[in-house]
Image 1 (tube, each protein chain N blue to C red):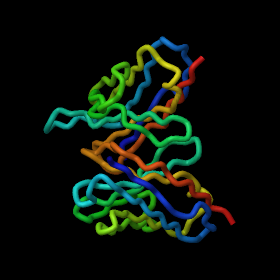
Image 2 (cartoon, chains in turn cyan, red; image 1 turned 90 degrees about the vertical axis):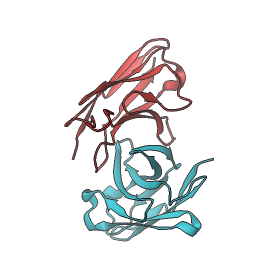
Image 3 (tube, each protein chain N blue to C red; image 1 turned 120 degrees about the vertical axis):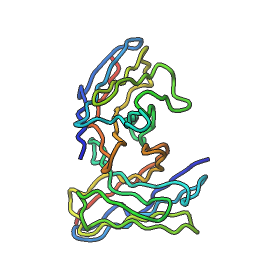
Image 4 (cartoon, one colour; image 1 turned 120 degrees about the horizontal axis):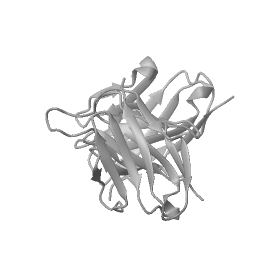
Length: 116
Length: 113
């Protein structure tokens, strides 16, 4: 069945770089796009960016040049890297499969705290 | 960017009652090409990731109970939950997937009296 699972450090120091991995199973990264969505505690959801099935990427301009998404199709993994982290980047980070624009499957999420 | 305005912020109902949640987009989500509205609804239970309920404004995702009904077109959309159950306690979000960046509504917290 379709599964996505995020992994990465729970604690990152301010100004450092966040690196997260989304490992997928049950579908191919060359057939579906995978997106990253962030949620601040108790707040709404924010679309961050996407990895297209053809390997192309696009990002929310709110993250300007801080964000980078890449993949390793042989390992069925999609990576998120975001630099210059600040306390306001604290939240839960989800990867989700996209089908026709909507997210049909989500990972469990990984909680990231930015603190010294 | 398309702004999604969702209301109410929260509501509390008793089991068996009906609730409506509204979502208004700053521009039309109706595609002239296929006449589909690119609006989805999600349910997020405490401690869980969001779950897709409705897409194309009114198409129920497989396995979603038929008491969840999506309606609306253009810029105004509604999620109706009839015969609310205790298990429906959750936050509900709308998502426009008409254009990038994809944007969500601010959420509605449903509480059961």
